[in-house]
Length: 629
Image (tube, rainbow, N blue to C red; front, top):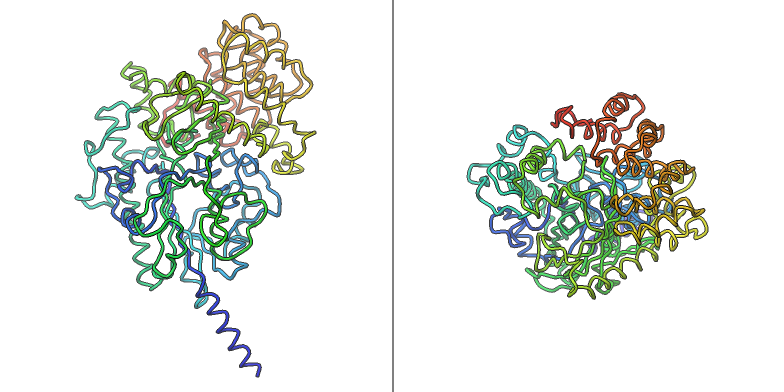
């Protein structure tokens, strides 16, 4: 009798498993859809991806929630926006509440075997335990082949062949050895076999570098083909739903790390086998949908397919299954610090327009990030700038940004014309601006705290939980101060100076940070108030006031303060100080200070990298991969 019951259970479990689809994720790195054939690029050679699109569903409005890998992966694995979890800053690894698990954990509860081959980079504290809970196996050997017979699987394979290291960061010789030579002669894309995006100078030197993008994606396409061949060889393709997408936009200057369409938009395809085509709400093979999708939709979608219960903290939209949610009118995206390059951008898109609010517009799009500065293409761009070869659009990448970007991404794919100041788009601008404000306040965006503050909170709590306390975090008043940042004018400066005398340190921080974007004529009437703020008891305020007072007024006391801030024991203060100096005209008084700070044993990677960018900008150290930090 006992054996009979066991047999029945085995049969029941097997039948239960078989009615649930296998799920395969094919993820690639640093790729915008503009460089893939099925998205209209006639120069691309991506037959494997194109076949997936021909037989599946291709999304034209899929967006990463961030513009660099680790924040994007935080949102993917948790199903929570990084501006809620406080994980928007690249590789910050702050704690999140214990109840937020990596979503494959919930698939395991529904009988799935979960495997990850092999990238993690989840940007949360306690990552080792987090990974252990989420995956049955996470390694370079992980795959569906290690599951129990008949067990449904969720398998992720991440391909690095299109990563920024291949397309720009490693030397050209490294690229030839590791990418170009892995392609057959007939598979290679030549330097003149593609159209150059208009915000890059079209020259033989730039084409030589940009051809790396096409060849790296071609190699990626080959690797995907090899994986799918193994799936078919194992007789699993007819029971597996395949998701294909990139982790964020193109890993080239102005793309990755930048809060515009070129940084956010990703290729995204879902392929259904015959037995699960009924799960597709978009219809037959070859369908193209403009439905809005972002990365926080992925976790609830996969849990829904597995017939699990979606946790309350996941606010993304299930795209498939019985509880599929209706399409959205807007998506909300964000971009914060990437490595040593501080920044803060909040974005809303409806698929036609994309509106981005630049809260630190004194930092240009082509900002100093060491991992990009060591790339030959970035050096060529700076060389062309110095030799006055660039047109106004190409130069703008190195200039202060406006407070707001508004692009028509249907008509202007490469985002060459900012509509924010054009009167005929005033209604669109106000609509998008209001939508973004509503989301910031409703979600209680915790990234309006400086990272210095988030790191302190993380010693005893989590930013996710802290943001929910209106007394400790009066976001409405903080946002009112932050909303001035980036707008120039004496009337705006007067409001910001008035806020400097308030009791809330975060409001004072936003007041002084906003003043950093003002020009000297707007600041002259308030020089005494700004100088006084150099002695504020909140370090981010005192530091920023010192940076303004030095840059605008050449104040010697401010110079001395900045040197101390560069060597501050708190890495966030040190990094902020060096970032301010990177965009200061007169750098010479700080050369020795930066050299000393770089040699300090307690400096983290970001501070050391910022030091190298500072010295590299003056030609005092080489900008190549051997000098990353």
